[in-house]
Image: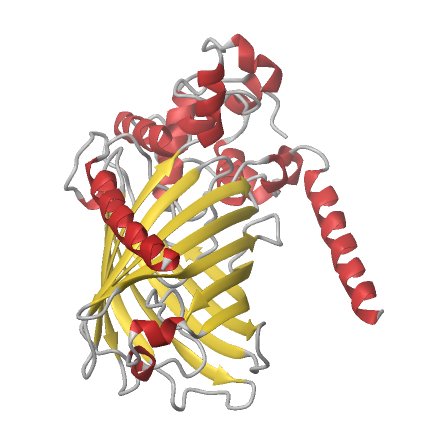
Amino acid sequence: MRAFKFVGLVVLSGAAVLCVAADGSWLKRVPEAERKRMNPMAAQPDAIAAGGRVFEDHCAKCHGEDASGRGKRPSLRSERVQHATDGEIFWLLRNGNLPKGMPTWAALPEPMRWQIIAYIKSLGPNAPVASSAAADTKPN
Amino acid sequence: MPRKVLGFLLQVSCNKLALLLLLCSLSLHAQEPPYFVTYSDALEEPGNLEISYKGISAAPTNTNAFNSATLELEYGLKAWWTTEVYLSGQSTQNDSTVFTGFRWENRFRPLMRNYFINPVLYVEFEDINGADRSFLEVVNHDSIADLYPANAEARAETEQALELKLILSSNTHGWNISENFIAEKPLNYSNPWEFGYALGVSRPFTLKAGSKSCVFCRENFVSGLELYGGLGTTQSFGLNGTSSYLGPIIQFNVPKGPSIGFEPSFGLNGNSVGMLWRFKVSYEVDQIFSHFRRNSH
C-alpha cells in the first residue's frame, strides 16, 4: 500500500511539474540577464551562411527549409520570433520547450547556436510567411 | 533452430544495413555525443527515427574470435521521452551464428529545463541469453570467462532483466561530460541487483560551423573517450573481480549522410577482453510518420 502511495505521489508530482512547465509562454520564463545577451556574430555574413547550414541540418526538419513552419511547428519568420532578442532565442535553444515538443539544443556548441540565431534574424520580420504555419507563429 | 536462423538473418541484414547506411546520402544526424556505451542527456528529436548498426569484433585469449551485431531503432516520442529497441546477434569463429535477444528501453528527462547537470532516467527490459556479446553495458562481475562456453551451451542460459540507469550529463564549452550509474535486476531467477558504470567525455573538433559545405573538415568530426565496467552486486559491491574498459572514440558525421563511429576498447584488467573493436553507423530519418502521411495524400 505504501508503494502505491509513493507511486501515486511521484505521478502527481510529475504531472504538476509538466503543468507548470507548459503554463504561459516561454518568453516569460527567460531571465532578465539572459534576455540581454547579445549575439557576438550578429549580422556577420559568414555566420549567417554557417547558421543556414546548421539550420538545414538540425532545424529545417521541424520548422521547414524556409523556416516558415511545418504542420504544428511554428514559423521562425513570425514577428514574435523576429522581435525576440538574441538572448531570448539563445535561452530557448539551450532549454528547449520540452512539454511543447521543442527539444533542448544544449549539446550543440554555443558558437553554432549563435550562428543559427544570426541566420534566423537574417530572415527579417517582414519576410513572407507560409499560410499553413501562420496560425502557429506564437511561441509557446 | 528458428532462433539460429533468426540470428543468421540478423547478422546478414545488419551487415547489409551497415553497407546501405554507408552508401546512403539522404539522412541527417543528431546532436548526440559519439559514445558506444555511455548515454548522455541528448534524446531523439520528437518524430525522428534513428537506425543504427553497432558491431564488435574481438579475439579474446583462450577462446574463439567473434563478431557481434546489434540493430538499434530509436524513436523520439516526445522531446522528453525516447524509446528504443535493440536486436542482437553474434557469430563465433569455429562455432555458430545466433540471435541473442532483444532489449526495449525508455529514457525520460524529468526536468523540463537545461541545468549544469541534467539527469535522465532510463528503464529497460531485456530478454537475452548467455551467448550475448553486444557489450551494450557491463555489470556485475561480467568477465572474459563468460565468453568461454560454446554458443549451444551459452544460449541455454536465458535472462529476463529490468535495467535502470541514472544518466547525468553536462554540456559546457563544447564538451559533453556524462556519467551513468547502472542497476540491473534479473527477473527470472533470484539473483541480487547487479551494478555497473559508464563515463564519457567528448568534444567536436571545432565549435563553429563553416560558411561553406565540406566533407573532410573539422566540423564533421567528434572525438571522445569512455570508461565503463562492472561494480559487482548488492552482496559484493565494488571493483574487485569486475572488468573495465577504456576506449578513445572518433566519429565522422558525413554531411547530409550517416554518422560513422569507431572505438577500440582496451581491457583494463585480467577479467576484461584484451581489445574490443567497436564500430557503428547511424542513420536518422527525420519525421518518419510525415513521410507516410505525405504518401497517403
